[in-house]
Structure formats: structure tokens, C-alpha cells
Amino acid sequence: MPAKAILLPFYVVVDSSLSMSGEPIDSVNDIIPTLCDLLRENPTLRDKVRFSMIEFASRADLRVPLSDLRDVQKPPLLTADGATSYAAAFRLVRELIETDTEQLRADDFSFHRPAIFFITDGEPTDADDVWHREFDTLVTGTNFPNVVPFGVGETNPTTLNELVHPKDRFHAYTVAEGHTASDAIKETTQLLIQSVLASAKGTEEGADGFVLDPDFQTEAVIPVPMDEDIPWKD
Image 1 (cartoon, helix red, strand yellow):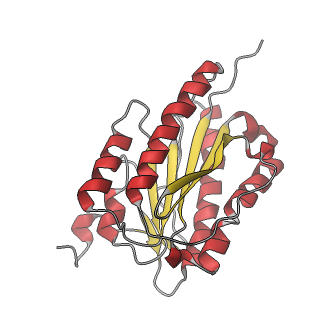
Image 2: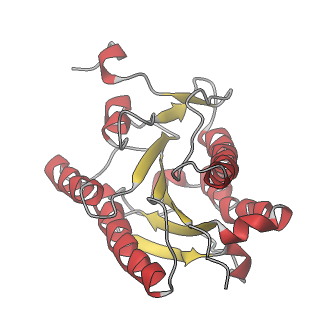
């Protein structure tokens, strides 16, 4: 019996707070159908990647369990409402990674370190010590994930840089001046697609999991400067 491929779990964690109303949440709702199209066009990815979607506002909820998206019969339809609890998002995704990786092992799968695409349009409404504690717990666990944050609204660049993990491998990204949150979400989806394809190709060539082009930027999505390069940082 041939060995099973080593899977790469992707977790798309998206802000669905009230400020995401209108075009931004509509663009978020296109993410899963776009990824489904990708898998239909690239059937070999089925053996290499799994996806999950989590939404967060005042609370966090699992909308797509970790799965082959071709098995998803009806993509979720998110609505915008509530506050912006980073703590709830980090807590839930940590719990899911723990249970998902246990299940993958039980199903006799090996897997690369999980990757999180964290998409938000605002600052957390939790107390700083609360969300920091949840984030630190997330990224120091046994199966700690790679985390790439995307600010598609008024998120402070310093906050975005705090969410990168590990910091020596990845960047935070933000919406470019003159572009909308909807523009940024659409182009972030394209970056996710590029990353999935590059990561899958990399594993075939012996690379170790998640791949993200360090030079990626578009008209609407640009890298956040490192903290020391941000002139308005306190």
C-alpha cells in the first residue's frame, strides 16, 4: 500500500465583526468557493492540503472543519456583526489544531506544521494582556503554527507585526493606501492560492511545508514595515 502524502493544514481565520459589513464580508464569502475552484483545477492537491475556516467577532466559530474542500457541499455564508475578539480566535484555532492533528495521526497521516492566514480589518477589542496571552499560548504549543496576518482596514501596523510567527520567516501585510478592504481581501485570496500551489510543489521537491513568497505584494496588499521602520511607533 503506497504511503500517504504528508498533509499541509491551512487555517483561514477571518474577521466578521460589524466593521466588515458590505463588500468586505462579501469578499470573505468568496474565499472558500475560490479555493474549491483551485482544487478542481489542480486535483493532485487533494492529497497534499487540507483547509479550515474560522470566523471571529465577539466570539469565534468554526465554519469549515479541516477537510478536503471538494467534500464541502455548501460553502458558509458569513455575516458581519459584533466586536473583534482576537482572544476568541486564537483560543479556538489552538483547540482545533490540537484536535485536528490528533485526528490526522489517528488516521495515519503525517503532516507539516499548520499555517494560519489571519485576516482582520481592525484592532482587537479584548484587553491587551488577554489576547497576547492567547496568542502566546497558540504559538508555543507542540504543534505551533506558522502565522501570517493581513490587515485589511485600520489595523495598527505594530499590532500586525506582533501576530507574525515565526518573525524571521514571514511578514505581516496591510492594505495599500487608496485601496479598499474588499480589494485587499481579494488579493489576499490570490496570495493564499499562490502559497498553496508553492507549498504543494515544495513538498514534492523535499521542502518542509509552508511556502510564502517573501517578495509578494500587489497594488492593494503590501508588506508591513518592521517595527523599527515605522516612524509613528511609540
